[in-house]
Image 1 (cartoon, rainbow, N blue to C red):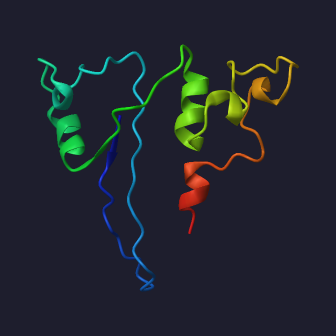
Image 2 (cartoon, rainbow, N blue to C red; image 1 turned 30 degrees about the horizontal axis):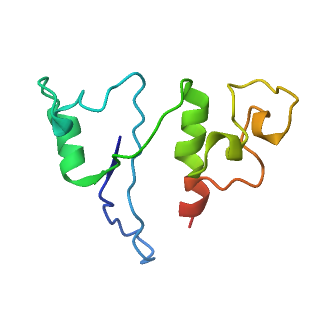
Length: 113
């Protein structure tokens, strides 16, 4: 997973520059499956993104993609975000409602101007 270094862009209105951020989440990829982490297979485009950005080396994924995405988008554990399982409401409390809790703040909301 890579978060490229923010590229500053200045809107025509002269407002302060805003960062250009891309978040990449790859399914079924091991830690050393791309070049920047030691893979034998060449991945020049991903390596270039990693070289010019921030590499997260302590992201832990869940067995299913929904809880992993909830953690990545909110910075919370899946159960704290309301996505302890996939997408169905298990009826056993807010940790298993199957969608983000209303009090969760996502990275998009934090970055909103």
